[in-house]
Length: 360
Image 1 (cartoon, rainbow, N blue to C red):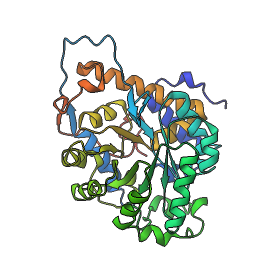
Image 2 (image 1 turned 45 degrees about the vertical axis):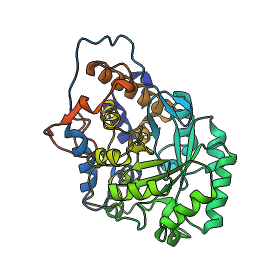
Image 3 (image 1 turned 90 degrees about the vertical axis):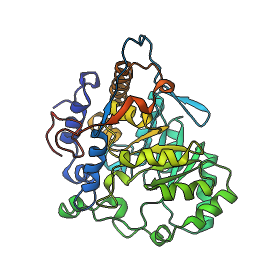
């Protein structure tokens, strides 16, 4: 059967359905699954579904600007392609394909250090705004080498992911006997990640001038410590529900972290964000950037780079529709007064944002 032309995708739900048809059971389970009972996955969606809108009317919304800033430059939406390990199991070309889609649309890519074809080749694939995310697998000199390589190849910031001291039990993978190619054996140097501490963050800030992102912050207490260490971006994340089971939803902890940070650093967030309304909720609550993990993968799985582009186009349309119906024309006009706590409706799982699909 011929793949659908991407212009035939009118909704994100159709893209998700196409991705499900195209992916083998192992990669599909890896993409959609979480840790153990997948409670954190569901709480990510529950937190977003527990936020309601307070629209204002009779505003002139004939022109809406949904662009944003990113380390001194401009991007089309305040979203970035979050780091995903093993993109090569989702789409031919792996991270290079994602880079091409990000560049063509105009949003940043955060490259995972466990994603092929690697730091240099991904940078060469497209001129997208880019950030490098590192899983620590070596000593200080090893980290410094990666910082230099990233700076030499145009990465504008550096990210340490800090919620992977232990690799979680992802039972969809275990039950399906899916052995991820990039984890076929215990990763060399994985004890360095387990031993990562604030001392390494302090050393990094003393040695390197590149903006530092700490990804995996889930409490006010750790956000405050990050501020004490001069971290430029506090990235609120629970690894998409794929690490600690029974964690809180990212959107649930975002407001208190934003208040504690008080503008002293940027706050980014990911965890269950699938629709334009989700993006608007996060920005209204004070986030500057929203990481998209599963959603770009679904676009790539559905139809390669054109599928990713179509996914981002539909998302942009959803964002602009939501902003207009809220009575605002730019992110600067959006405030916490546009959202409120609301009773959630229906089920809450990785795909509950797409009610026509059924479960995952």
